[in-house]
Length: 75
Ligand SMILES: [Zn+2]
Image 1 (cartoon, rainbow, N blue to C red):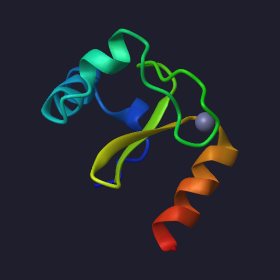
Image 2 (image 1 turned 120 degrees about the vertical axis):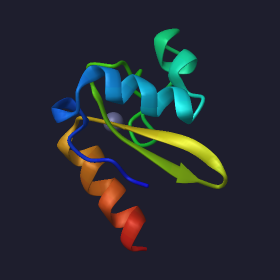
Image 3 (image 1 turned 90 degrees about the vertical axis):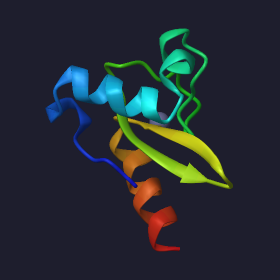
Image 4 (image 1 turned 180 degrees about the vertical axis):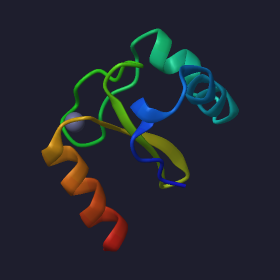
């Protein structure tokens, strides 16, 4: 379920995806944090959405965070 290159996705599609995952409000109200660095996730810096421990987690656009995400996925 990992979506990469969200910025390439049309904003409406991204918002629809986030709404379908019921996490749009969390991001819009700036309560979402990057799973790896703790940075606040916004529609501008969101890089990926992924499931972990039955929760929806987010990854920001920082390269280090994305590398951690890949490691997590391959673990
Ligand atoms: Zn991050």
